[in-house]
Image (tube, rainbow, N blue to C red; front, side, top):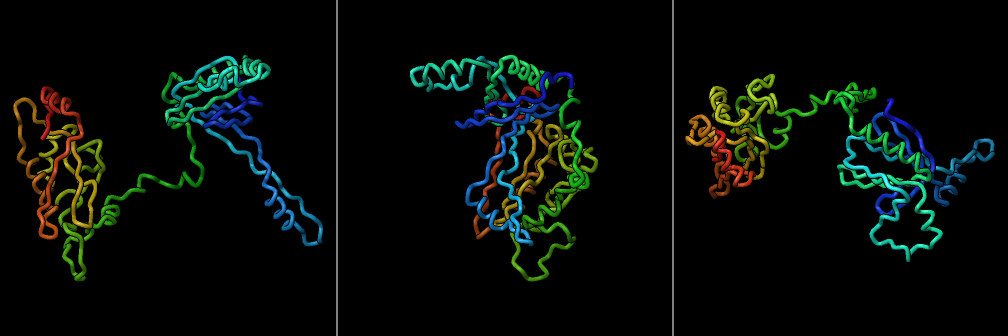
Length: 324
């Protein structure tokens, strides 16, 4: 890419988490790569390699005493902020004063330039360059590679999976029936009676799979298969979605097989200023509450939790939304 003014800089010092190490900085189209120099093996490992390195004819085989080079990869979109400064990044440490460092070292710290990088994952990196002009070239290159003009220049649109990744289709990695069967629901058979006489989890037979959202026509942000109460028909769901923001009707997210308790999620109801109601939506909530049933002779408390701030929830009434 024309944005890259310099592709490789040797003798760059990386400061990270209180440690400093010198290596080579590489700039590619989509990544900033810092290569650490090969590290020698510990003495005891070298001795073990030498003892085990005897060849069949009694001659000493060549022993590799260095490990492979380690690398630090940083994708450009993860960079939130980058600063260019003269001198070493060490002089910006809050606890460092001129009294702590000799005059000779202070003069060395004022030479060259440094880049201080703040990443969106809360990592902080600093790079020291011996040559200020090289530091400026790297800074300008990273700025252009980070602030792109076209979304299609992002790495996600240019990534080519390796062979082992290409054959794996992640769309089939998650299966709704398999996942909720693992949690304790019986969704495979029409008759969920306990034919084996084994003790089953409370409410294990009160849910079913609906394919009403096939091709994501009912709700674009929901999976194609959803878990709903068995007592609720698909026709009831069709009317329920009209009373929910973005058609996100209540659907099962988690089943706790120890006592049959569940977590279902949905969007806000479209109550509005006229206090609208939906019989189908109320019936769906009622049937969800019934699936919890009773456990150990105690009544289960059903709770509706609104995660929004109170002011936001009240303000939604003015634009057709609301709360339960």
